[in-house]
Length: 422
Image 1: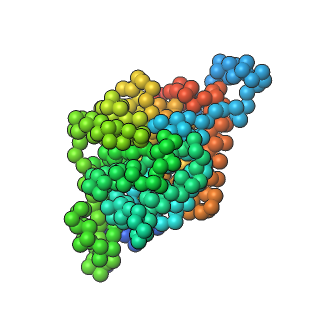
Image 2: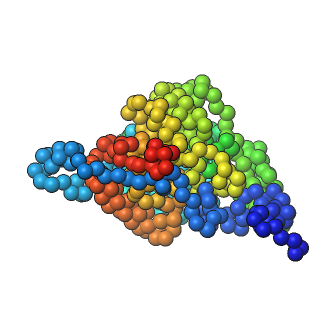
Image 3: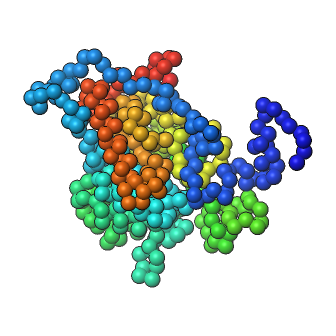
């Protein structure tokens, strides 16, 4: 290597691009399948956003605590906070759900199944992401191995109570070609969920890690020819590498296309709840309005901080609105009792309560759920949710409130401008 140096300039990154060409646009492909990627993933210290900098601010005067005291006949305690809620039409023990992991290899094996079983036992909803069936098949036939989707759905149903939680199956453009929703809707394995109103379908319009582009994964080189009819296959690594890049389409949406898609979902799958997943786009409030007006039971917004799968560095750190700004734009527009679900680097209770105070109905756990299950395959997610439960009870009661629905913008303070999400 040359002795040339460039202090104050990203020399290391430039040299990486000079060595590996297009492959350097993404994280190190040797880490694929064992690393979760999201905003700031290559930084030594996690970046802090506006929500992290905000503070929860308990009041002196607590009229809602007084009401609770009259109801109980004693001073209220943190344990009196009611954390049960309805998330997109699904009853949940906590205002959290497990976000979609997509088709990333990290979640396609036993880890995804472990998350499913523990989420079901805990009574919190779980989303199963897109592009699983087109790549790996469904596995309903006797001579086929069950796909990750079917394994997770089956494990969740086995562990869940009959009246709590639910499974949400996501579908993208390629999934629609593979008729994923039709397969799930007609599968006997789905009947317990359908019969109890605990199956939902989520239309994937976009995602936080890669707004404006479709899902991406690395696949074995020998599978490229088989999948090239459905996906864009890019050979961006050295010819001796085992993997190639598989890219999905983001789909094409206008307000009318989105409206008609939701109406079609309601017509074709009348026993399902209907969810819509939006990226952190500049017109996210407009899209949310269209979705709710068309009859969506929930709108999920991935902040730019969200992500578990494979994405270019530039998208992870520079593309899409921060979660705080998404919440501000939608909350300023929404004046109705809609189910607004959000995700983006939520791993502990204070961030969850802040999001709820800013207008979210519930918060998704992506990387946190996978890391917890990886730490303890039998109880990791269960333990994480137990920690959430304690934190939420303490935080919400400290605000003088005892129901999730009572949280409001008055409970949160932003430094500098003293404005919400600024």
